Length: 158
Image 1 (cartoon, rainbow, N blue to C red):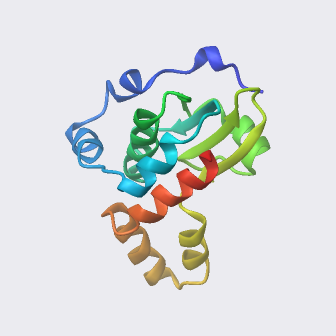
Image 2 (cartoon, rainbow, N blue to C red):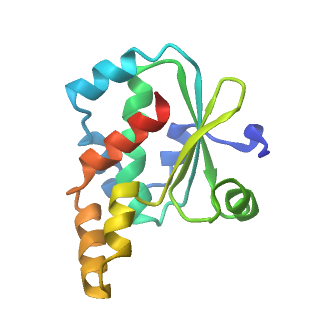
């Protein structure tokens, strides 16, 4: 298992991020339905987030998990760099892709993981040709699939 004491909180994670990161976070809004659902979670969740500041997919996805945490005090986020944790990620989720977001209950039993993209989007990318893959990833980074990110995180957390 990973050493949780080596994690940082969201504010520390955001310290070296540029204005784009802050703007995306500021403009990330959860649906009312998602807010209602996450507020009803009455069990502890520990969320380990592996990221790197240069990763555009992290910039898109991480604000959603942070917004979910803001709606429920039972959710605790722990941020780690991927660098230096590749072996743990490969063991935990089979790959060292980012963002990798692993959700555990209060006893640190694994509940699920989000790796790089929502599963539905991964399937779409997998069956696409190279040009279409690039287009899908571009749309993801522009926010077209934000509802899938929100749904993915909610499914893992509840």
